[in-house]
Amino acid sequence: MDTSCNTLDSLTFDNRFTGELPADPEAANYRRQVIGACYSRVAPTRVARPRLIAHSREVAELLNLRIDSSNAAQVAEVFSGNRLLPGMDPFAMCYGGHQFGNWAGQLGDGRAINLGEVRNGRGERWTLQLKGAGPTPYSRMADGLAVLRSSLREFLCSEAMHHLGVPTTRALSLVLTGEQVIRDMFYDGHPKAEPGAIVCRVAPSFTRFGNFEIFASRGDQATLRRLVDFTIRNDFPHLGEPSVATYAAWFDEVCRLTAEMIVHWMRVGFVHGVMNTDNMSILGLTIDYGPYGWLEDYDPNWTPNTTDAGGRRYRYGQQPQVALWNLVQLANAILPLFDDVQPLKQAIEGFSRHYEQSWNSMMAAKLGFRSYHPTTDADLITELHEVLQLVETDMTLFYRRLAEVEVAEDSAPRDSEAAAETAIVNWFAEAYYHADSATGNSGDAERPLNEAYSQRLLAWITRYRQRVRQDGTPDAVRRERMNAVNPKYVLRNYLAQLAIDAAEAGDYAKIDELLEVLRKPYDEQPGKEAYAEKRPEWARHRAGCSMLSCSS
Image (tube, rainbow, N blue to C red; front, side, top):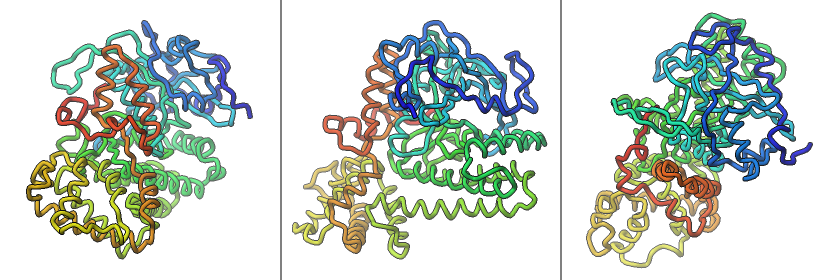
């Protein structure tokens, strides 16, 4: 098939969602409850001065689309929503959701408008979606717009997650609107004008758990069945034609895909922040990058979401349990399609088994083992996670430093025991947010160590060395294995904020610089080490660098 680069006007649209599912009969764009429909057709709101400030060349290639300086203005017009291409059929999806554990009723695409489904030269279908393109019938009391800071964060993180190997929606472009948007960032009564922006998100499908929940909540089994059948035929065609048996196989696969996604989050230290059921992709993709964050100090109870600061429902360590809870809500929604609840129960139980197996394999890979051995590795992994919490330890840096620890028999230190202890603890010094909390001396090798911490770490390192020797893996091989799954570069919130600060001042080069580093997160990248440094102290409590709100 032809995979050459095309112009905008040669993009081929194949809009199955709007072609095969029931539409909202009301054409007017006003806030309302939409009954019996999967979507509402709605046009993006025109903006004053669209300007393309960043794009992903990889996503453009997925679409066989050429983007360069010669067509940047046209790209900005299209992906701000100012110009609709032939074949586009813009719409907003209807869905509901459980938010923070409570049923929230109808939600829907309140600030997202799907432009259409592009068919590329490989026969793949990609949905193009604008986030921040104006109000829809699902906007409730909001304006449907987005600002530069949140749009830039979504653009960068979508692509960063892809290059990390995490299942995710993608981002094609970031466009300034030339208009100001009023936002109260922390809902504290201090609104201000911010630059408006629009991200073009790309995915095979943006269908969420909540798309099915809304029809179940209304007792609309006919539309529920139509949507499930459509989803299977279009997104899971390998399962065969829809039937009760196929429904069971489909839900089982959704459980498996979700488990795999969460394991990837845990592997790289990603915290979604808003795991509501309307933010859960039916394809097991990370979707809706709002107040996300990267686990820097290893604290399983940390959440990046200020709205969740009290209950910490969506904290790092609870993401697997929340995913399971969300799957139960999806199971409840599709239950009317089954004669027996047992297949759903089996799939839910399968999630737990699959997650545990994937987690164990993932942790073995992070530690450089050939495979997971429960008799030795379960306690070893548990002890490591306890040690990481004894002092503020940067998770990303710790694993990269651990890969460099020599394990072979002839590499054992020949210095005095005290010197050897000092060397090991100081080896991880760059991963400590307060070096003196670990060493007792801010890294001064002549002063005594934090005895309790150092002894616990040293005991673990001894056990770790013994385990690696049992594998018989040379240090170089183990190091390569570990560095392939433990990233050196992640999108730390302070790095995103620095790019936001620069962009708000008119410097957009920082976006491309950061994106280029994030394209190779596992590589050393000489000269780019500054992007791998732990969060600086000035960013500990600064807005945007630690916790964030749902505001955008």
